[in-house]
Length: 436
Ligand code: PLP
Image (cartoon, rainbow, N blue to C red; front, side):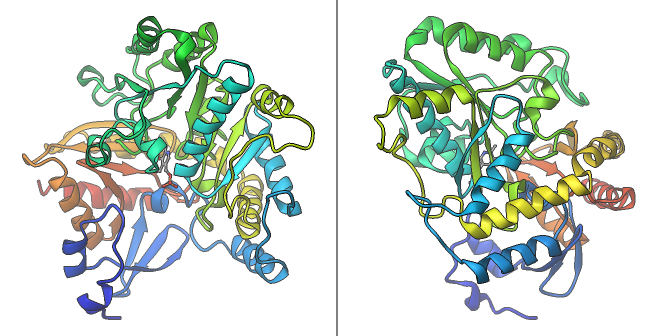
């Protein structure tokens, strides 16, 4: 199939260098298992599970059939004061996977919406307790929390923030956890737990009574896979408990097996008050996000409202869309039936061995990894991001799709990948990175 540049003009692509892309398009027209096919009929390995969503591999029949059936049965129904049974089933399934005590699930349509929803739930919770002056949020440098105004305000990525002015007020950022001494650490760095004390410093500076919540990704995914130092998340939990601050884990990437367990919360043994999720919730087959909240938060907000009153003035037209619920139920059934979280845990050592074998290539300046998620930094060529973009294109031409953020490549294969697929991915990475 050939595409003329002018037939592509009208779509303004997100997070894309549109002018360059439209000169030399990279179109994906088919996906199956761990593979994509481009418009020239060439087959590519999917080394990033799309954008970390396709944990069970592409084109899963069970999901497609469930969505098709649902659309023919009932295509759409609102969830304001009426509801469809599938959302309750999906909520029960999600609650069965989250840590004990996080039993209530609010649905939305994306990771970004899940973050903004969690921000609003945190504010509503404190207000319901008569603590409505807690309006400040703490997050972290090098965090990615989506692109809505709340999430951008929390995020710690300069290019995502600087265009948009002051964004949401009252957000302060802890230091990120990357350190040059920990380069090429596999798993959790030994040192760095004390970076969590930045939260205590904000308590000392602003007063705990002004702080609503602390948001972190258990592993900061999009900025290059920053694995938390040992003890770091526990320390955040402790500081939050001491001062009545809610702890929110943004598990949009970490959730659904990426760390070897259902959620990073379980892998790292720390239970937050809320978990945001999206992506692999439906195996990427339908747009959907969710926030799992603690019984305490749900109970406080719901019980604070008068009988018959709406308790939380928040929701989306497509919250718990029936087709998304059908996809979510089918995806979680696949994960369970095929034991895919366990498979991710078992495949992880092989995957990490393979990724860390790239150490020694001159352009590779750091590798980090945990579970089925790894970040590989390339030396910049003087213009941050230019080499990462060049590598994206070279890898695509060589038959591998991976997501780059700046000069960090993020490798996160579907859990159904065979060892031979991982070997092929690494061969292509080695060949391309050795060209620099
Ligand atoms: N939060 C985290 C941790 C993410 O990694 C992402 C996306 O990569 C988001 C939020 C935003 O999700 P979405 O792109 O579905 O809005």
